Length: 456
Image 1: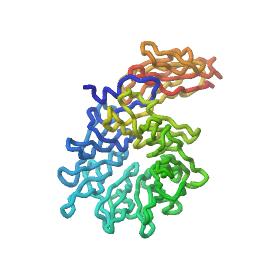
Image 2: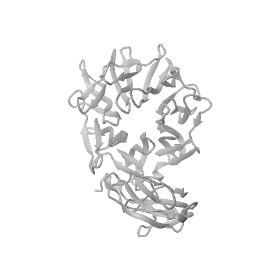
Image 3: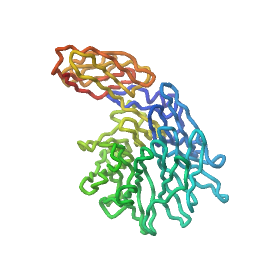
Image 4: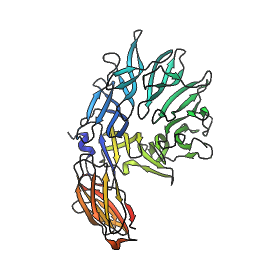
């Protein structure tokens, strides 16, 4: 039987997303977030043989070829759990079942390697879940069910010690849910996004932490909208994405700038179907799931600068048996986690966008051709030419570079991090010359985007 890993490494054509499963032998489940900063971590859940969710953390030590899978566990033996957020230190938040007065309920947890699974203390709540954690572990946010039965968004300080959760401002008689959060470090402001729900059940996009405290953002229609992603740019009060329901009840994606939501509002198209559901964003890009013309859910990337909508299955090195159905998180625009479908079964995976660069661009001096985030220990070649076109890669039918009459500038092998750098001497006569460069990893049928450089 062909393994999932073998499927994901099968040949594809002209694609620069290197997709990997969360572990070498994953069970069906989902990866909710993947993040890299030195070492890399991801979290989510797998299904056990009884179909119950089991929270997992996967770690990928820098320079190692292996991943390490850790079962997060639950507060009660045999209980279910799910990791929903992870940060650069491998700290995880989510929910885990606990026995409360004879009833198993979902309770929010905070996990770190030093203390293991810890219960987040919620005031006057019967159950709850944590949906996000800050980059360096200073805070977390989530939702609880209050004693009166209403849902309430909250945040909690985790550093220097974990405090009791604090409810976020919510109109009297309304509900609120925290779906996404952003805070880089303890000195940066915390943003929480999600929704508020009025007594009639209508839902409105909400954001907490900006200059106006809790703010309901304007979206089309009369409600039923939520905020699902916050920009990862350097400006803490920047962009957000989410979706609302149209008159037919279909999800419609949007993006906007938080400081001017009315004039910056952008409605996202679909991939040919009736709905689009953003889940995350970073700077000028929005990701999530959208219906295509065949009625299938597909992972998408939407570029705000240029208004371009793309099915990420057209870029990922996956064979026909594998489909990227949804982007579940993004990190700095280069790494993503996905829900993927293999012959109808859902698994979790992550990807890295294989990139290349040439620097410096001085004629008569050395320049470095570099490639990053590719598969480890794989042959790589840098191709160059002077005009756009196509050139077949010898020995790999159907694999082409997007440069006419391309020639090899350098070749080598990626290291344990999937990177490769080659230093070349640029002739003095190259001043003013424009060159097209593209990296190729033939063993995985990966070609990067074309980089155009002009030497000075």
